[in-house]
Length: 213
Image (tube, rainbow, N blue to C red; front, side):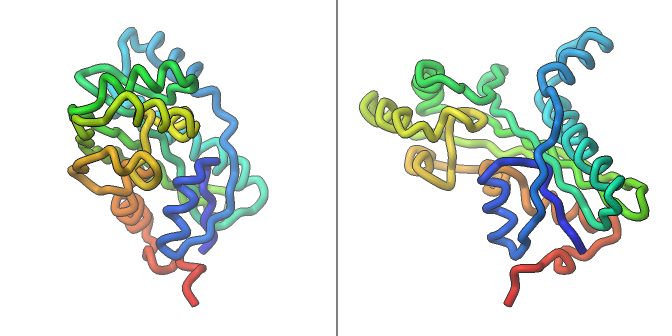
């Protein structure tokens, strides 16, 4: 069974490899801000985090799946999107050191929620079948993170391009005291959720293994 990861995220690729899957990679051609703006304008409301990440996961997976279907691809496409919420405020990728620093000052000693949208599409004979869901995990940050630690962490560049300005599986992990929920959700996608969605499409998870000796 072929697997395509509709993402350029190194963290999601790492997760796939850790569970025995070497996926094909394809970058979605989706204007995320435009997608959200169009839907919110049409519906006259602001999408809550769960709907926001699920919509983008669906659009990303669909974009790649339709292109692969035209090539005769037979397998599954996995798309995902994540965002971090703290006291009702949404934190995407900070992009700048100044913004990352500000966020860490706000997050230390507090607990927020990582929302992760997932969409799995089965591509077969040019047709598409869908399964999708949202996973959430609560993340508690250490209260004693110092200004020097924040400065040096931000200087590594790691937090600039990840949702919420933190990682749990790399340098940022030492500043996180607790994760309530599937830990892989915080890394990039919930593996248990993806497995369930794959099975909903009639595919055994172990059929995706292609890195097992």
